[in-house]
Structure formats: C-alpha cells, structure tokens
Image (cartoon, rainbow, N blue to C red; front, side, top):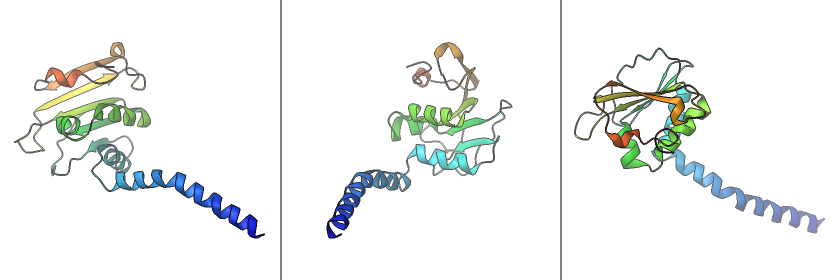
Length: 160
C-alpha cells in the first residue's frame, strides 16, 4: 500500500513538473500586454457580428469604422504593434482571423507623435477565403491615406 501511494505521488510530481511550464507561460501572457491575448479578450467582449477592436492602452476614443462586410477585426495603431512591440504580429493576427473566421481585416494605422486615436490611414484587406489567405485570393483596398510599402508584406498575403 505504501509503495502504491509513493508511486502515485511520484507520478503526480512528474505530471505537475511537465504541466507547470504551460501554466506559468499562460499566467505570464495574461499579466503582460501580449497583443494576441488582448485581442482574444476584446473579441470575446464584443457582441457577435459587431466590429471587434484591439485597443491599445492609450487609445481613449475608438474611431468608427463602417464596414458592411460582416465581421471585421479592427487593429488600431497597427504599425505600433507590428513593428515596436511584438515580432511576427501579422502571423498572430492571421491566427486570430482564422480562429474567429473574420471576413476582413481593417488596419487603422497611426503614427508616433500624434494622438493614438488619430487615424492617418484606413486600409482594408478582404479575402474570398480568409482561412486560406493566398495572394490571389486577397485584395487590399486603401480607404483613406497612403500605406507605406512595408505594410503590404503580410505573411500569407504579400509576404508568405
């Protein structure tokens, strides 16, 4: 009986050791400004069929976006998240797009030195099948402003 209890305790310790890195990783992600986690939180917070917004911490007023396409993922301050904060941000965005089956991605791109809620560029990517994301299936539409060429290098769209 003692041997069985020791064996079970040993197995429990092994399982706890294997599972702990994942638990710690999840805890760390939830306590940092990980855009992927924040995006998932914001998506869950909005009603189905609405406009989902990834809110950067200093954005107070969310610019209105008229889409009329169905469900959109709106990314404020896209340049800030993608270039300054998190590597492979585009790939994470695409993961969220696939997971939630968005019909389009709208990027609201600001610039350093201007208020975060000022939209300098409004750019839309629509795809006939957002889950596949091949260049021949996607179209980029400038709604306002000019987009620097670097922003066209979306993994799976312009830069696989």
